[in-house]
Amino acid sequence: MVLIAKSILILFGLFLIGVGILMLLKPEKARGILNKAASTTIINYTEIGLRMVPAIALIIYAEYSKYPMVLSIIGWFMALTSVVLFLIPRQWHYKYSQAWTKRLKPIYFQIISPFSMLFGALLIYSII
Image (cartoon, rainbow, N blue to C red; front, side, top):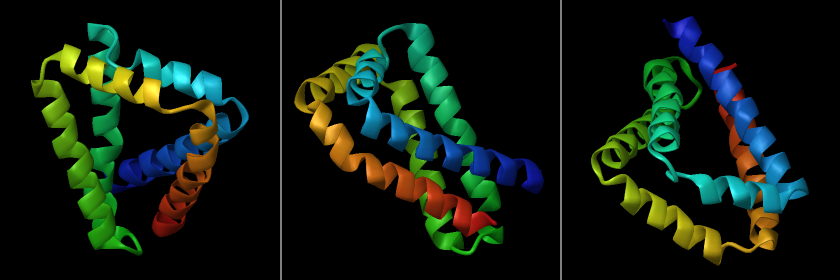
């Protein structure tokens, strides 16, 4: 189980790096993806389910990492917020993502993109 969690976290770190690259090079596409968050029941619950996978992996693997407390807190935060998103009406989640899509101009995606890449790299570093 620990090896599976570690593998999931490496993939999640690579995913975050990839998302950062997407935000940097194609900010309109990243904005379009955010715009679709919770837009349908299938997208909403798939998004929440996929979010739970690295959350649980963070909780499982935290004690084996270089930063157990940090990974545990992040994992529990992701898991608990996923449960909240699962329990609230989908339309609330959709309206929230729509509000952020309107506020976030493409340049903002480019500005925050290094944080996604850095977090992904730090996650991988903390578990290898």
